[in-house]
Length: 241
Image 1: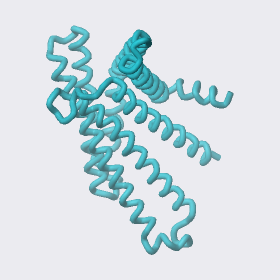
Image 2: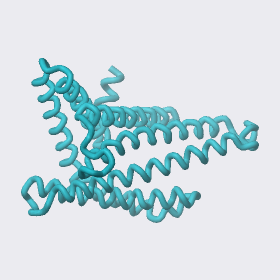
Image 3: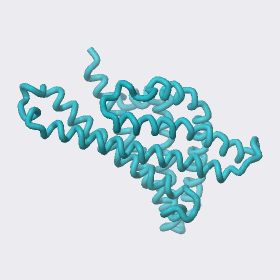
Image 4: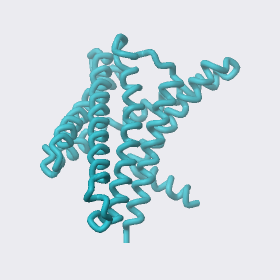
């Protein structure tokens, strides 16, 4: 019952619902792609799962029509990252926020073009939004790798060797942050592989992934995201008086 209660609570939030839709969608694409490619007798089931995956992806696209304001408020609040001590992290974060902010309107225009609301080339706008997403993922990977290097350097410094100078709680917090950053890198790498696949043909491995591989990478990324969200919630509960 505790698991059901936690799931119901997560589904009440937009982010929790989006994570679930994303995970289920990619899982359907993974299983459907395998059935279509490897099991001819189950190809009809596989085709239906791929259709369900496509509809869930379209659902997420529709829901993202309302994300612009939230992203704008986050970008405005972060600003130029004056509170960040590290110049590299500040610059990468500002560029990442800019890429994310531009991503949404580009995707909205592409969606509107597919829906025949706007008379523009949807393929060009889809490519632009995917490129912005890929850029954001690259910047996120760079930021996380930099943070891992910084944190490991702190933990290995002579000062950190003495627990009296570095409290055990802070030590554990730094180790937890390193693990979180590593998981973020792995998640972003999986998404980046798919982002390149969805770019126009001729760009690296664009268009070369079979559906099951896209589903596998998306499932890995989604499960890592869910795990991080659950772990972050557990830490928040543990620190709540």
